[in-house]
Amino acid sequence: MPWCDGCSRFWTVEAVPADRTCPSCGAGLPDAAATGVGGHEEKVPWHFKLLMAAVVVYLTWRAVQLVARVL
Image 1: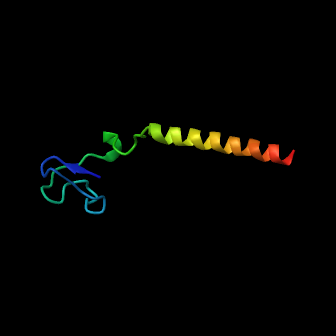
Image 2 (image 1 turned 180 degrees about the horizontal axis):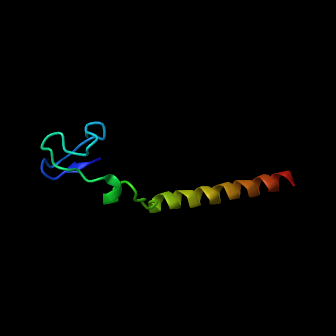
Image 3 (image 1 turned 90 degrees about the horizontal axis):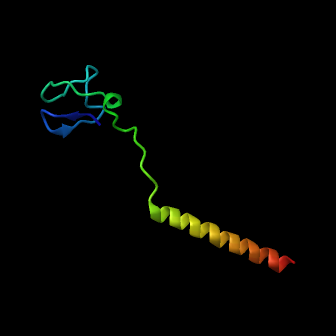
């Protein structure tokens, strides 16, 4: 989302004209690729990793129980 420093507000992509100027004050808006916005990746939260580890341990234990029951 383009940010206008003059107006202090975000503009939707649909609201910004093709010449990349602010619809309200006419100031130039930076390109998202030039500012690096939108390209960053967030880290996976620790509690999600813990949940995935618990699921793996649980499913492994259930597989061991299944094999023990069959034999």
